[in-house]
Image (cartoon, rainbow, N blue to C red; front, side, top):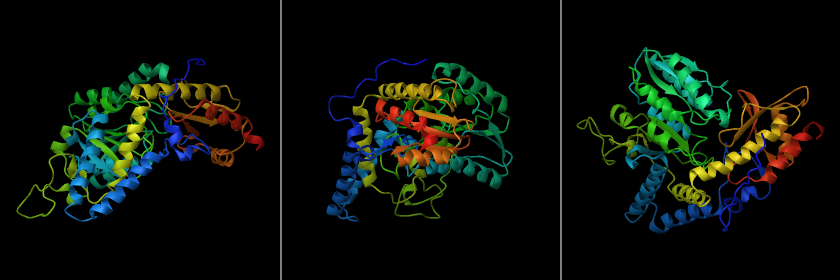
Length: 412
């Protein structure tokens, strides 16, 4: 059913879209790959670089500034995730946020890992290598075919929990499930999954890839419930690449060990001694390693603040869903185009397949032809499809440009 609900305008001051040079000369739907960096965020990064050089990059004057940047960034990300700051580790990206705690979990030979069939290859590869080294068994949790959309979310949630119950074994020690599936766009019931795992005799850990969640949907309930909830700032949050975070449960902090180790992992960064068998931070900092790019923190905080000016997480998601629903419906009505989901998407990821009898081009060629017209989407390999993302920065005009181009893509 088409939605005729109005899409509410942003506040009367400059919209986030107007602050992003990358959106000025193209029609952009790749927020799930990388979001555009607003000018104020770039200015914040530049100002931070300059301030560090003014203070001296390695002087006693610079350390209070660096400490404040780290603490302020950690606090802001922790607040968004609904966890206390000691449970929030800073990372460079989603992969490091997932993998560093993963490899520190108390998992033993013969244990069982359960991984959904919609996880990103980077996380899957890390789990498979862990399984190879520790001789673990791995099975797949099938969620891809649960193609319900927003209007069937309760049905999808129930199906996920039922599938999970059927696949758990007495030796299951880890479940890997993204909050928002990067290929189909489905939202997973993370808090309910966490509650179900707590009732299991082995109390499996829950690792959540939140690459598509931070900045797009409310994350506090899921982040607070998961054991490992890893995200990045460079996608939907429109921050700089190279900075993200991971929310960790108290259980992970109590039972896990550091993996890739550096001076930031240590309680006393000036020494490591045989006389100290427990030199690492007791909190999330045990999973932070060494020197990172401090100016990026100012840029990410700026982008997060700009997002908040567009409305709260729920308000932003409402606008994103209105746009994605309209795009889903228009794609559904387009000959030769088949959205993956049976109903409107739960958020801004809209994936669709092409009927080869109507559109003879491969998805990668469609991406190229649209790009030649300044319209940017992406193709995915598993399943083979195209993906367009709507954001608070998107507009009705963007949707019409994409639909119009797809109508004539065979002829271009």
